[in-house]
Length: 246
Image (cartoon, rainbow, N blue to C red):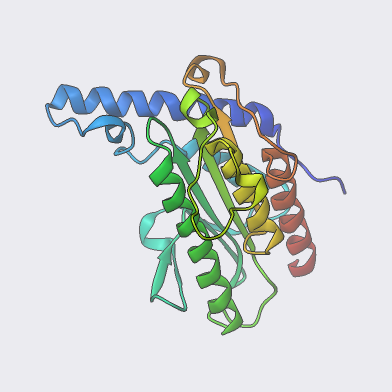
């Protein structure tokens, strides 16, 4: 049976529109209340910016055989046990017949500051995955096959994120592929290596300009870290799980 990719491009386009519109709505609401945060933070405090992508993931899960699975989205139901810390909060958990099927993180970053945020996101992504797989090894989720673990990052396509970045490493050279790489390119390399090192089943960076609030246009920088790869991998894992557990 063919996988159902649920017209993901159209749904992702709507998700991108919602991302930018929700940010702007949150910013305006705070200004009107007289309690606006500093800079770009005013656009993230509503916490709903990535809901369109979350809805896409849910559609993929339901369309590929696990319509009856528990899909947890509420904060109080989104924690998993860790190994290096007691618990970790995820953005989407899928559980079926007592088995952890999928754990997904949805992140975003907009300008103007990309440098410190890139480093923070990188460390967070690596640490989260290492913690989960160590807990999995120690049977924190019981004896079961490996779950799908996904990381999706939405990054603003802007001059600051496309500009070549210089690094200073006085003792040893940085890897050649990072030399002069923009932050968008660095996110793409991060996603590729998170998958190569088996830290995530798939990791994706979606890029979009602010004008995508109207157009819904988005892009990926490589096939390995594309949204299509993410959606296909999730659909395949769900279909295989459904066949195994039904």
